[in-house]
Image 1: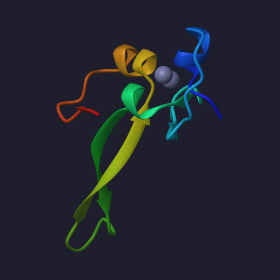
Image 2 (image 1 turned 30 degrees about the horizontal axis):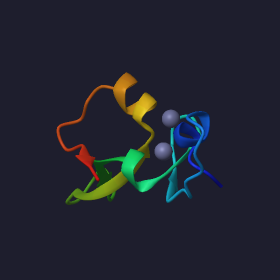
Image 3 (image 1 turned 45 degrees about the horizontal axis):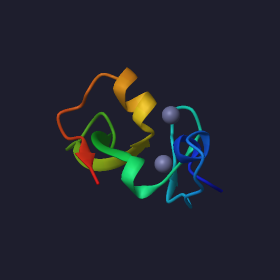
Image 4 (image 1 turned 120 degrees about the vertical axis):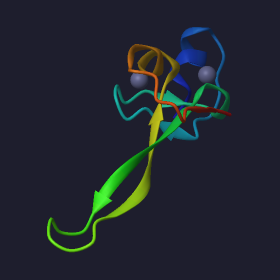
Length: 73
Ligand SMILES: [Zn+2]
Ligand SMILES: [Zn+2]
């Protein structure tokens, strides 16, 4: 698969991931990786939190509410 943004710009770049919102293939330079906290465990007992990863293309990342922990590769 090729990066959608690069493909529309006329170049072919291999993808490293897929946008979790629109499904477009994205290359490293275009990937927007965000982390979000996911609660684990049952409602009773000690809740735990884990960091989950979200990969977005630049378009969807710009449209989404900007998380505080967006990392640009
Ligand atoms: Zn690209
Ligand atoms: Zn997208």
